[in-house]
Image (cartoon, rainbow over all chains, first blue to last red; front, top):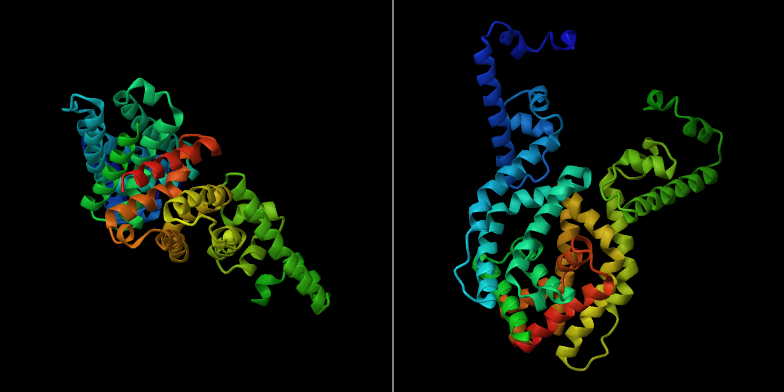
Length: 205
Length: 205
Protein backbone atom coordinates (compact mmCIF):
# COMPACT_ATOMS: atom_id res chain seq x y z
CA UNK A 1 0.00 0.00 0.00
CA UNK A 2 2.70 2.52 1.09
CA UNK A 3 3.96 3.30 -2.40
CA UNK A 4 0.44 3.88 -3.64
CA UNK A 5 -0.14 6.48 -0.94
CA UNK A 6 3.19 8.29 -1.35
CA UNK A 7 1.81 11.11 -3.46
CA UNK A 8 -1.37 11.74 -1.52
CA UNK A 9 -0.86 15.28 -0.12
CA UNK A 10 -3.34 14.72 2.70
CA UNK A 11 -1.31 11.81 4.00
CA UNK A 12 2.04 13.53 3.66
CA UNK A 13 0.64 16.27 5.91
CA UNK A 14 -0.78 13.63 8.18
CA UNK A 15 2.67 12.23 8.87
CA UNK A 16 3.68 15.41 10.67
CA UNK A 17 0.33 15.71 12.46
CA UNK A 18 -0.52 14.53 15.95
CA UNK A 19 -2.69 11.45 16.47
CA UNK A 20 -5.51 13.66 17.80
CA UNK A 21 -5.27 16.06 14.85
CA UNK A 22 -5.57 13.20 12.39
CA UNK A 23 -8.58 11.84 14.21
CA UNK A 24 -10.34 15.21 14.24
CA UNK A 25 -9.62 15.75 10.57
CA UNK A 26 -10.89 12.30 9.69
CA UNK A 27 -14.14 12.86 11.60
CA UNK A 28 -14.57 16.18 9.83
CA UNK A 29 -14.16 14.52 6.40
CA UNK A 30 -16.69 11.90 7.37
CA UNK A 31 -19.24 14.56 8.30
CA UNK A 32 -18.50 16.52 5.11
CA UNK A 33 -19.11 13.40 3.04
CA UNK A 34 -22.40 12.59 4.72
CA UNK A 35 -23.56 16.19 4.48
CA UNK A 36 -22.67 16.27 0.77
CA UNK A 37 -24.71 13.15 0.20
CA UNK A 38 -27.76 14.50 2.05
CA UNK A 39 -27.44 17.75 0.15
CA UNK A 40 -27.22 16.05 -3.27
CA UNK A 41 -30.16 13.77 -2.62
CA UNK A 42 -32.28 16.54 -1.09
CA UNK A 43 -31.64 18.64 -4.20
CA UNK A 44 -32.87 15.88 -6.44
CA UNK A 45 -29.59 14.21 -7.51
CA UNK A 46 -30.97 10.88 -6.42
CA UNK A 47 -28.23 8.67 -7.75
CA UNK A 48 -24.88 10.38 -7.14
CA UNK A 49 -21.69 8.34 -7.47
CA UNK A 50 -18.64 8.48 -5.23
CA UNK A 51 -16.90 11.01 -7.52
CA UNK A 52 -19.78 13.47 -7.32
CA UNK A 53 -19.97 13.07 -3.54
CA UNK A 54 -16.22 13.74 -3.27
CA UNK A 55 -16.61 16.87 -5.39
CA UNK A 56 -19.39 18.38 -3.29
CA UNK A 57 -17.79 17.33 -0.01
CA UNK A 58 -14.55 18.90 -1.21
CA UNK A 59 -12.50 15.84 -0.33
CA UNK A 60 -10.57 13.42 -2.51
CA UNK A 61 -12.23 10.37 -4.02
CA UNK A 62 -9.83 8.30 -1.96
CA UNK A 63 -11.09 9.95 1.22
CA UNK A 64 -14.64 8.93 0.31
CA UNK A 65 -13.55 5.34 -0.10
CA UNK A 66 -11.38 5.44 3.04
CA UNK A 67 -14.47 6.27 5.12
CA UNK A 68 -16.92 3.95 3.46
CA UNK A 69 -15.70 0.74 1.97
CA UNK A 70 -18.10 1.17 -0.88
CA UNK A 71 -20.64 3.83 -1.64
CA UNK A 72 -23.39 1.64 -0.23
CA UNK A 73 -21.93 2.32 3.21
CA UNK A 74 -22.88 5.94 2.66
CA UNK A 75 -26.45 5.02 1.87
CA UNK A 76 -26.55 2.79 4.90
CA UNK A 77 -25.51 5.76 7.03
CA UNK A 78 -28.08 7.96 5.25
CA UNK A 79 -30.87 5.42 5.92
CA UNK A 80 -29.86 5.20 9.58
CA UNK A 81 -30.05 8.97 10.05
CA UNK A 82 -33.30 9.32 8.17
CA UNK A 83 -34.89 6.60 10.31
CA UNK A 84 -33.55 8.21 13.48
CA UNK A 85 -35.06 11.53 12.48
CA UNK A 86 -38.57 10.23 11.88
CA UNK A 87 -38.71 7.68 14.71
CA UNK A 88 -40.17 10.14 17.25
CA UNK A 89 -43.15 10.69 14.89
CA UNK A 90 -43.46 7.01 14.02
CA UNK A 91 -43.31 5.83 17.63
CA UNK A 92 -45.53 8.49 19.23
CA UNK A 93 -48.70 7.04 20.80
CA UNK A 94 -51.96 7.64 18.94
CA UNK A 95 -54.53 9.88 20.56
CA UNK A 96 -57.61 8.19 19.07
CA UNK A 97 -59.45 5.59 21.11
CA UNK A 98 -61.02 3.49 18.32
CA UNK A 99 -59.30 1.81 15.40
CA UNK A 100 -61.08 3.72 12.61
CA UNK A 101 -60.01 7.09 13.96
CA UNK A 102 -56.52 5.71 14.57
CA UNK A 103 -56.22 4.71 10.91
CA UNK A 104 -57.19 8.27 9.94
CA UNK A 105 -54.62 9.59 12.40
CA UNK A 106 -52.11 7.36 10.65
CA UNK A 107 -52.91 9.14 7.35
CA UNK A 108 -51.76 12.47 8.81
CA UNK A 109 -48.73 10.98 10.46
CA UNK A 110 -47.60 9.18 7.32
CA UNK A 111 -47.97 12.27 5.16
CA UNK A 112 -45.65 14.08 7.58
CA UNK A 113 -43.07 11.28 7.64
CA UNK A 114 -43.18 10.65 3.89
CA UNK A 115 -42.66 14.33 3.12
CA UNK A 116 -39.48 14.34 5.22
CA UNK A 117 -37.99 11.17 3.82
CA UNK A 118 -39.16 11.33 0.19
CA UNK A 119 -35.87 12.06 -1.63
CA UNK A 120 -33.86 9.69 0.58
CA UNK A 121 -36.33 6.91 0.17
CA UNK A 122 -36.60 7.35 -3.59
CA UNK A 123 -32.79 7.30 -3.70
CA UNK A 124 -32.72 4.03 -1.74
CA UNK A 125 -35.37 2.53 -3.96
CA UNK A 126 -33.31 3.27 -7.08
CA UNK A 127 -30.07 1.93 -5.71
CA UNK A 128 -31.54 -1.17 -4.13
CA UNK A 129 -31.17 -3.11 -7.35
CA UNK A 130 -27.41 -2.70 -7.13
CA UNK A 131 -27.10 -3.45 -3.44
CA UNK A 132 -28.24 -6.32 -1.24
CA UNK A 133 -28.00 -4.03 1.77
CA UNK A 134 -30.30 -1.43 0.28
CA UNK A 135 -32.73 -4.08 -0.94
CA UNK A 136 -32.93 -5.21 2.69
CA UNK A 137 -33.35 -1.59 3.80
CA UNK A 138 -36.25 -1.16 1.37
CA UNK A 139 -37.90 -4.32 2.66
CA UNK A 140 -37.40 -3.17 6.26
CA UNK A 141 -39.26 0.06 5.48
CA UNK A 142 -42.14 -1.88 3.89
CA UNK A 143 -42.24 -4.30 6.84
CA UNK A 144 -42.21 -1.44 9.37
CA UNK A 145 -45.08 0.33 7.62
CA UNK A 146 -47.05 -2.87 7.58
CA UNK A 147 -46.41 -3.82 11.21
CA UNK A 148 -47.54 -0.38 12.44
CA UNK A 149 -50.72 -0.67 10.36
CA UNK A 150 -51.32 -4.19 11.67
CA UNK A 151 -51.02 -3.01 15.26
CA UNK A 152 -53.92 -0.64 14.56
CA UNK A 153 -56.26 -2.87 12.50
CA UNK A 154 -58.67 -5.22 14.29
CA UNK A 155 -58.07 -8.95 13.89
CA UNK A 156 -60.89 -9.53 11.36
CA UNK A 157 -59.37 -6.97 8.96
CA UNK A 158 -55.75 -7.90 9.59
CA UNK A 159 -56.39 -11.55 8.82
CA UNK A 160 -58.08 -10.72 5.50
CA UNK A 161 -55.06 -10.58 3.16
CA UNK A 162 -56.85 -8.60 0.44
CA UNK A 163 -58.34 -6.02 2.78
CA UNK A 164 -55.18 -5.59 4.81
CA UNK A 165 -53.14 -5.13 1.63
CA UNK A 166 -55.66 -2.56 0.37
CA UNK A 167 -55.15 -0.47 3.53
CA UNK A 168 -51.40 -1.04 3.37
CA UNK A 169 -50.98 0.09 -0.23
CA UNK A 170 -53.07 3.25 0.19
CA UNK A 171 -51.13 4.18 3.33
CA UNK A 172 -47.80 3.22 1.78
CA UNK A 173 -44.97 5.33 0.45
CA UNK A 174 -45.60 4.47 -3.22
CA UNK A 175 -49.05 6.04 -3.22
CA UNK A 176 -47.65 9.16 -1.60
CA UNK A 177 -44.79 9.40 -4.11
CA UNK A 178 -47.16 9.00 -7.04
CA UNK A 179 -49.51 11.72 -5.81
CA UNK A 180 -46.74 14.17 -4.93
CA UNK A 181 -44.07 13.55 -7.57
CA UNK A 182 -45.81 12.07 -10.61
CA UNK A 183 -49.09 13.94 -10.23
CA UNK A 184 -47.65 17.08 -8.66
CA UNK A 185 -50.34 17.40 -5.97
CA UNK A 186 -49.66 19.69 -3.00
CA UNK A 187 -49.14 18.11 0.42
CA UNK A 188 -52.70 19.11 1.35
CA UNK A 189 -54.20 17.64 -1.82
CA UNK A 190 -52.20 14.41 -1.51
CA UNK A 191 -53.25 14.02 2.11
CA UNK A 192 -56.91 14.63 1.13
CA UNK A 193 -56.67 11.97 -1.62
CA UNK A 194 -55.24 9.36 0.79
CA UNK A 195 -57.84 10.32 3.38
CA UNK A 196 -60.62 9.96 0.81
CA UNK A 197 -59.41 6.45 -0.06
CA UNK A 198 -59.06 5.40 3.58
CA UNK A 199 -62.48 6.78 4.48
CA UNK A 200 -64.09 4.98 1.54
CA UNK A 201 -62.38 1.75 2.58
CA UNK A 202 -63.43 2.20 6.22
CA UNK A 203 -67.03 2.79 5.15
CA UNK A 204 -66.96 -0.45 3.15
CA UNK A 205 -65.95 -2.73 6.06
CA UNK B 1 -10.46 5.67 -36.04
CA UNK B 2 -8.79 3.09 -38.31
CA UNK B 3 -5.88 2.32 -36.00
CA UNK B 4 -8.23 1.84 -33.04
CA UNK B 5 -10.21 -0.73 -34.93
CA UNK B 6 -7.26 -2.65 -36.36
CA UNK B 7 -7.35 -5.42 -33.78
CA UNK B 8 -11.11 -5.94 -33.70
CA UNK B 9 -11.52 -9.47 -35.14
CA UNK B 10 -15.11 -8.79 -36.16
CA UNK B 11 -14.06 -5.91 -38.36
CA UNK B 12 -11.10 -7.69 -39.89
CA UNK B 13 -13.56 -10.33 -41.02
CA UNK B 14 -15.95 -7.64 -42.14
CA UNK B 15 -13.38 -6.23 -44.56
CA UNK B 16 -13.53 -9.41 -46.65
CA UNK B 17 -17.31 -9.69 -46.34
CA UNK B 18 -19.89 -8.48 -48.83
CA UNK B 19 -21.98 -5.39 -48.09
CA UNK B 20 -25.07 -7.59 -47.69
CA UNK B 21 -23.33 -10.00 -45.36
CA UNK B 22 -22.22 -7.14 -43.12
CA UNK B 23 -25.72 -5.75 -43.00
CA UNK B 24 -27.25 -9.10 -42.10
CA UNK B 25 -24.66 -9.67 -39.41
CA UNK B 26 -25.23 -6.23 -38.00
CA UNK B 27 -28.99 -6.75 -37.83
CA UNK B 28 -28.42 -10.07 -36.11
CA UNK B 29 -26.20 -8.42 -33.45
CA UNK B 30 -28.82 -5.76 -32.88
CA UNK B 31 -31.48 -8.40 -32.27
CA UNK B 32 -29.15 -10.37 -29.99
CA UNK B 33 -28.49 -7.25 -27.95
CA UNK B 34 -32.16 -6.42 -27.55
CA UNK B 35 -33.05 -9.99 -26.70
CA UNK B 36 -30.26 -10.12 -24.09
CA UNK B 37 -31.62 -6.97 -22.51
CA UNK B 38 -35.19 -8.28 -22.39
CA UNK B 39 -33.93 -11.53 -20.94
CA UNK B 40 -31.85 -9.85 -18.22
CA UNK B 41 -34.65 -7.53 -17.18
CA UNK B 42 -37.29 -10.27 -17.26
CA UNK B 43 -35.06 -12.39 -15.00
CA UNK B 44 -34.83 -9.61 -12.47
CA UNK B 45 -31.50 -7.99 -13.37
CA UNK B 46 -33.21 -4.66 -13.56
CA UNK B 47 -30.18 -2.45 -13.96
CA UNK B 48 -27.71 -4.19 -16.28
CA UNK B 49 -24.85 -2.19 -17.73
CA UNK B 50 -23.53 -2.36 -21.30
CA UNK B 51 -20.84 -4.90 -20.32
CA UNK B 52 -23.40 -7.32 -18.90
CA UNK B 53 -25.61 -6.92 -21.95
CA UNK B 54 -22.63 -7.63 -24.24
CA UNK B 55 -21.82 -10.76 -22.23
CA UNK B 56 -25.32 -12.24 -22.47
CA UNK B 57 -25.77 -11.19 -26.11
CA UNK B 58 -22.42 -12.80 -26.86
CA UNK B 59 -21.14 -9.74 -28.74
CA UNK B 60 -18.29 -7.34 -27.95
CA UNK B 61 -18.85 -4.29 -25.79
CA UNK B 62 -17.95 -2.23 -28.84
CA UNK B 63 -20.75 -3.86 -30.79
CA UNK B 64 -23.23 -2.82 -28.10
CA UNK B 65 -22.06 0.76 -28.37
CA UNK B 66 -21.95 0.66 -32.17
CA UNK B 67 -25.67 -0.15 -32.23
CA UNK B 68 -26.82 2.18 -29.52
CA UNK B 69 -24.96 5.38 -28.97
CA UNK B 70 -25.42 4.98 -25.27
CA UNK B 71 -27.14 2.32 -23.25
CA UNK B 72 -30.20 4.56 -22.94
CA UNK B 73 -30.87 3.86 -26.59
CA UNK B 74 -31.39 0.24 -25.60
CA UNK B 75 -33.93 1.19 -23.00
CA UNK B 76 -35.67 3.42 -25.49
CA UNK B 77 -36.01 0.44 -27.81
CA UNK B 78 -37.18 -1.72 -24.92
CA UNK B 79 -39.85 0.82 -23.94
CA UNK B 80 -41.03 1.04 -27.53
CA UNK B 81 -41.46 -2.72 -27.85
CA UNK B 82 -43.16 -3.05 -24.47
CA UNK B 83 -45.64 -0.30 -25.41
CA UNK B 84 -46.26 -1.90 -28.77
CA UNK B 85 -47.01 -5.24 -27.09
CA UNK B 86 -49.60 -3.90 -24.67
CA UNK B 87 -51.25 -1.34 -26.97
CA UNK B 88 -53.90 -3.80 -28.26
CA UNK B 89 -55.10 -4.33 -24.66
CA UNK B 90 -54.83 -0.63 -23.79
CA UNK B 91 -56.71 0.56 -26.87
CA UNK B 92 -59.46 -2.08 -26.99
CA UNK B 93 -62.95 -0.61 -26.55
CA UNK B 94 -64.64 -1.17 -23.20
CA UNK B 95 -67.71 -3.41 -23.13
CA UNK B 96 -69.45 -1.69 -20.20
CA UNK B 97 -72.08 0.94 -20.88
CA UNK B 98 -71.83 3.03 -17.69
CA UNK B 99 -68.78 4.69 -16.20
CA UNK B 100 -68.76 2.80 -12.91
CA UNK B 101 -68.62 -0.57 -14.61
CA UNK B 102 -66.04 0.78 -17.04
CA UNK B 103 -63.76 1.76 -14.14
CA UNK B 104 -64.06 -1.78 -12.80
CA UNK B 105 -63.28 -3.12 -16.26
CA UNK B 106 -60.20 -0.91 -16.19
CA UNK B 107 -59.06 -2.69 -12.99
CA UNK B 108 -58.94 -6.03 -14.82
CA UNK B 109 -57.31 -4.57 -17.88
CA UNK B 110 -54.62 -2.78 -15.87
CA UNK B 111 -53.77 -5.88 -13.88
CA UNK B 112 -53.17 -7.70 -17.16
CA UNK B 113 -51.03 -4.91 -18.64
CA UNK B 114 -49.05 -4.28 -15.45
CA UNK B 115 -48.23 -7.96 -15.10
CA UNK B 116 -46.74 -7.99 -18.60
CA UNK B 117 -44.69 -4.84 -18.26
CA UNK B 118 -43.67 -5.00 -14.59
CA UNK B 119 -39.93 -5.78 -14.87
CA UNK B 120 -39.45 -3.42 -17.83
CA UNK B 121 -41.26 -0.61 -16.15
CA UNK B 122 -39.42 -1.05 -12.84
CA UNK B 123 -36.19 -1.05 -14.86
CA UNK B 124 -37.17 2.22 -16.55
CA UNK B 125 -38.15 3.76 -13.24
CA UNK B 126 -34.72 3.00 -11.76
CA UNK B 127 -32.75 4.29 -14.71
CA UNK B 128 -34.83 7.41 -15.23
CA UNK B 129 -32.73 9.34 -12.74
CA UNK B 130 -29.73 8.89 -14.99
CA UNK B 131 -31.48 9.67 -18.26
CA UNK B 132 -33.64 12.55 -19.45
CA UNK B 133 -35.11 10.27 -22.10
CA UNK B 134 -36.23 7.68 -19.58
CA UNK B 135 -37.55 10.34 -17.22
CA UNK B 136 -39.71 11.47 -20.12
CA UNK B 137 -40.71 7.86 -20.82
CA UNK B 138 -41.79 7.46 -17.20
CA UNK B 139 -43.85 10.64 -17.37
CA UNK B 140 -45.43 9.50 -20.64
CA UNK B 141 -46.58 6.27 -18.96
CA UNK B 142 -48.08 8.23 -16.07
CA UNK B 143 -49.78 10.65 -18.48
CA UNK B 144 -51.16 7.81 -20.59
CA UNK B 145 -52.60 6.04 -17.54
CA UNK B 146 -54.21 9.28 -16.44
CA UNK B 147 -55.66 10.20 -19.82
CA UNK B 148 -57.32 6.80 -20.24
CA UNK B 149 -58.81 7.09 -16.75
CA UNK B 150 -60.01 10.63 -17.50
CA UNK B 151 -61.74 9.44 -20.67
CA UNK B 152 -63.80 7.10 -18.48
CA UNK B 153 -64.60 9.34 -15.48
CA UNK B 154 -67.58 11.72 -15.66
CA UNK B 155 -66.83 15.43 -15.65
CA UNK B 156 -67.78 16.04 -11.99
CA UNK B 157 -65.21 13.47 -10.80
CA UNK B 158 -62.54 14.36 -13.34
CA UNK B 159 -62.63 18.03 -12.34
CA UNK B 160 -62.20 17.20 -8.64
CA UNK B 161 -58.40 17.05 -8.34
CA UNK B 162 -58.40 15.06 -5.09
CA UNK B 163 -60.97 12.51 -6.22
CA UNK B 164 -59.44 12.05 -9.65
CA UNK B 165 -55.98 11.56 -8.11
CA UNK B 166 -57.43 9.00 -5.68
CA UNK B 167 -58.76 6.93 -8.60
CA UNK B 168 -55.52 7.45 -10.52
CA UNK B 169 -53.21 6.32 -7.74
CA UNK B 170 -55.21 3.18 -6.95
CA UNK B 171 -55.33 2.24 -10.63
CA UNK B 172 -51.68 3.19 -11.16
CA UNK B 173 -48.62 1.03 -11.62
CA UNK B 174 -47.11 1.89 -8.21
CA UNK B 175 -50.01 0.37 -6.31
CA UNK B 176 -49.74 -2.77 -8.43
CA UNK B 177 -45.99 -3.03 -7.90
CA UNK B 178 -46.34 -2.62 -4.16
CA UNK B 179 -49.01 -5.32 -3.89
CA UNK B 180 -47.19 -7.78 -6.12
CA UNK B 181 -43.50 -7.20 -5.40
CA UNK B 182 -43.28 -5.71 -1.91
CA UNK B 183 -46.24 -7.55 -0.42
CA UNK B 184 -45.93 -10.70 -2.51
CA UNK B 185 -49.65 -11.01 -3.26
CA UNK B 186 -50.74 -13.30 -6.11
CA UNK B 187 -52.18 -11.72 -9.27
CA UNK B 188 -55.67 -12.68 -8.07
CA UNK B 189 -55.17 -11.21 -4.61
CA UNK B 190 -53.64 -8.00 -5.97
CA UNK B 191 -56.52 -7.59 -8.41
CA UNK B 192 -59.03 -8.16 -5.59
CA UNK B 193 -57.30 -5.52 -3.43
CA UNK B 194 -57.40 -2.92 -6.24
CA UNK B 195 -61.01 -3.84 -6.95
CA UNK B 196 -61.91 -3.47 -3.28
CA UNK B 197 -60.39 0.03 -3.24
CA UNK B 198 -62.08 1.07 -6.47
CA UNK B 199 -65.46 -0.28 -5.33
CA UNK B 200 -65.16 1.54 -2.01
CA UNK B 201 -64.28 4.75 -3.82
CA UNK B 202 -67.16 4.33 -6.28
CA UNK B 203 -69.58 3.74 -3.40
CA UNK B 204 -68.41 6.99 -1.77
CA UNK B 205 -69.13 9.28 -4.73
